[in-house]
Length: 598
Image 1 (cartoon, rainbow, N blue to C red):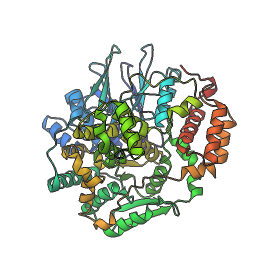
Image 2 (image 1 turned 90 degrees about the horizontal axis):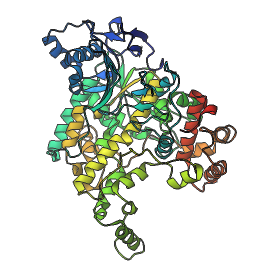
Image 3 (image 1 turned 120 degrees about the vertical axis):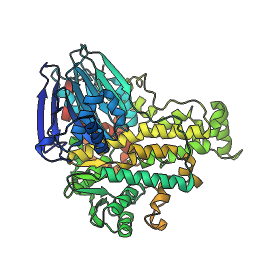
Image 4 (image 1 turned 135 degrees about the vertical axis):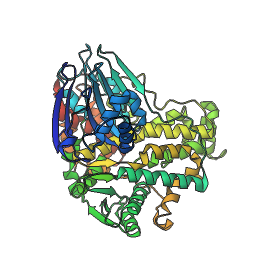
């Protein structure tokens, strides 16, 4: 945990011996010892460990002072603690921030674990199967060091979920009895050990829409301006990540308006690759007049950072864009301790092709699947209007799940013939067979928010915390989300475009010609690297050592899978990276030779 909090550490045990807290601090507000954690309330009735930031802590503080609370520090930690001390769990919906905290009430011996509305900050926990207690941490690997020893055996259903999606979504943990607290939830543990899970915020399924046109852009502009102003509060240097896209340039533009030309903006480039964003980012910097800092990354430097990526991944995680995210975090940390990022824009404001594809063809889901298959076939052979393969899915949810998977069911049957099904309660992508266009749009945003976004936020947390850098995300501010939900989804996809509302707002800051039409993504040429500088690493990891878990992978099928990638017969970079990440994690954190499936 030292990388997450290099500035201080603290420990506390409740007088009754029921609760024990440990904390590593990255000092952001009130750098003095008054911000030390674990923190005890002024009246001694409760204690907290808290990771993240409460952006409206000043408003909370004013309300608490009016109620007679006296403060000893200038931290948001104390404002959160005293709010919980006064209002209990009713304080949680009052929070606007990114947070994971655990609060212990010494009066009634209850423990509360809570996570922010969007899942920006992680919170893992382990429930002892015999009821001896609950262990919790900001990193999954910390649960392996609990007082009761390692958790139970590997869950085969969660392994299958990981191999399909290349990450493990909440609420699951790879090992039995381990979990992730879901976004917008809190967990209450009573003195008797009873455990209750509660949702304190959810993204609404059917939001009320009342904004469009210039009114939508004006409302979003005001909300984002307030969000950036709140999220710029820090007692340490702050900068911004700047890409060549739309989201982070918009956040940067708003921050630049509020500050000045000394605002530091950080970009990494990959010279010579077709997805290098350094040139459009530099053009944004010229338009906005920033202190622009570009670090060109060579393939050799990126490959040499692989060990850092492996150590940052405290649970199996196979999104290889963690590599450039780690590199830009390392670059920024040389000058700042806090960075603003554009995460969340794609998921709230329809920035991906998936919702567009679904909406273009969603009307056909009113028909039974055999009819849809016939319509698709007729279009394919020129016997009727051409239709997308989207309609061949059994449902909108089936379509969405499969486009989010990086390893197909057919490949898994070959590579892991004995592996069981997905968790029976995994319902993220479930949907009705047909919905009206507005319903499909809302469904799409919801599964992006609880699907793709969670993977991206986990990646950002791992990469930034590896470099002791706090990353804040103004586009996921609760006020910004609430405005986004009020905007007609079709305003965001006007004319078949993506994030049209964000683009129109950005055009108030930079010439529209500077805003690229396409979406590059924050990626690296991993397929080429696996065939080139990482080829030996693949061979040694997958074929020269025992694989985790023992007895699950079919070696001959795995060899064919790898050779097909080497020879260019298929692009298997995602599946290979998923397998590699699992092995690296097991080697780093487990005595995996003794591990079996449940």
